[in-house]
Length: 144
Image 1: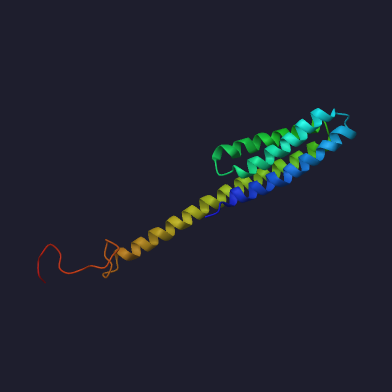
Image 2: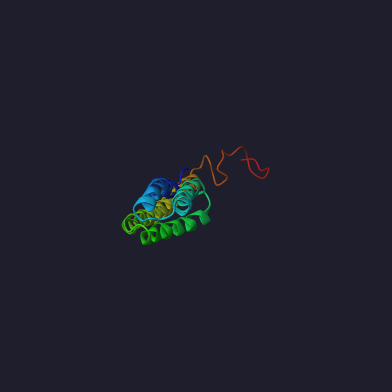
C-alpha cells in the first residue's frame, strides 16, 4: 500500500528542488555570489532534494528533509526572497509530514478494526469456528 506521507513529502521535495535550483542564477547575478559557490550550493541542494525524495522509504530520510528545510530558509541570508520561499516550503513539508502520519495512523487503525470485526464474526459462525476453516467430522474421535 502506498504511503500518503511519502507521496506528499516527495512531491514537496521535488518542487522545492526545482525552486532551489532556479535560485542559482539569482545568487550569481543579483546577490553577487561566485559561480562556483552558487552552483555548489544551489545545484547541490537541488540534487539533495531530488535524491531525498526517492529515499523516503526510510524514516531517517524524513529527518534529513527537515534539514533541507532549514537549509532552504538559510539561503535567505544570500537571497532574501528565499526566507519567504523556504518558509513556505517548510510549512508545506510540515503539513505533508504530519498530515501523512495522521492518515497512516488512521488507516492502520481502520484496518485493525476491520480485521478484528472479521475475526470476531468468524468466531461466532458455526460453519467456520475459531480455526477460521470449515469443521470436518467428529472431534477427538468421538461419534455423534
